[in-house]
Image (cartoon, rainbow, N blue to C red; front, top):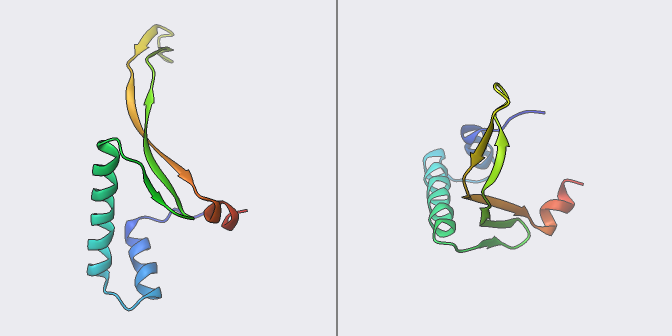
Length: 93
């Protein structure tokens, strides 16, 4: 199983379209910025068939330091979540 990084993704998209790598990189960076800003504001971003980006609240909890076995308090936090859409789920079955 190969790991596809941003440069490899740009190359693949460039091969499938007539767009330059520079234009594709600009679109991907704008996509990241918009998604990040929208979920930071608490909005849900849905791309029908592909999936949904949203923010999730994680409650505070107690954990264990694996090196010392000491109990530690893990604070509450907000984390990004991605839920795959139906078409994406079907494509990877």
